[in-house]
Length: 211
Image (cartoon, rainbow, N blue to C red):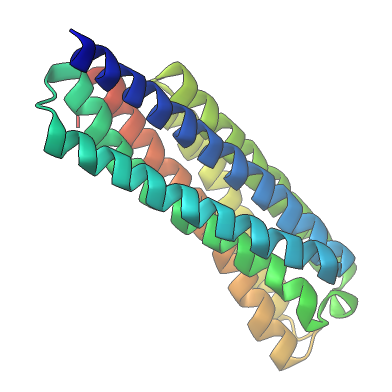
């Protein structure tokens, strides 16, 4: 009985750590957008440090989950939870890296080269990206299997903004080196949406057992 109680305490700890990872990603996306638009190099450095913390937490969660598989024989709901976490946390880790990559562009002196149109599109991609990640965190918190469709709609909005962003870059209003850096930024936002949608599918499996 005590062994089982200890096991469930470990599951609760894992769940809390996953929620913390979600918070770090959401805050990272918001902070990265602000740092890029302001050209704030200090904020960018802070976000790099935050991503290092996220990476450490990711490694810790994976280690704890793998240890539970080694020590326990989880069944049914507990097994589904542990499998879901193993699939969700790599998506969170990669998303933290993407936010860091966006922030790093603040240190490369490109902020002053942004046209008003590009600034507006970055602002919008950042806004939708934060909405996506906040909604993904809620889906996980609530084990909401229906969240996947809503998240796909937000991801579609982010994809449309990305297309508009690339079209503006192709207009030749910024230099080629700046356009290359900004094309990467657009791709980072687009990938953030993809990871959120992937997690929503994992949440559906966690909630229902359906793949």
